[in-house]
Image (cartoon, rainbow, N blue to C red; front, side, top):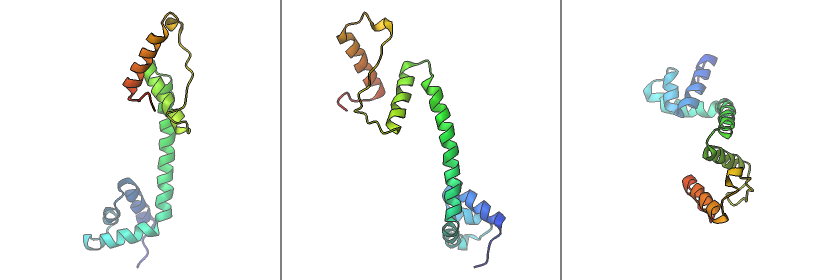
Amino acid sequence: MKKISLEKQEIFVEQFVNTGNATQSAIAIGYKDSSAKQMGRYLKKKFASEIEQQQKEILLNMNNKSLSVLESLLQAESESVRLSACKLVLECNGYSKNTEVNVKFKDSHADKTDEELLNELEDLYQKMGISRNN
């Protein structure tokens, strides 16, 4: 098979990373419909390391954006949003749903009975879709 230009290689890799479709990526660099499927498979295999590298770079950029969004959620005004963000951080770091967490209540909760506090906690669990037995 003839060697494709560096420019076409870059276009193929970018197209494949964006679409996941080797046939359409081959068509994008000029292969005819009749040979695009076969060439797409061949080029996907040939440029597998370049495809993987570009996918890793995209994921790394997404990680940075995701962490920025998560950080803003941890600072949100809504307690339920902050709690959900904390839960996500803990789960991503290996803590299971069964992890016990000590919560320090604001002074506004100091005059409530244990039963009232447990009811509020149960309401929070229900809003977050968490079964208390997890």
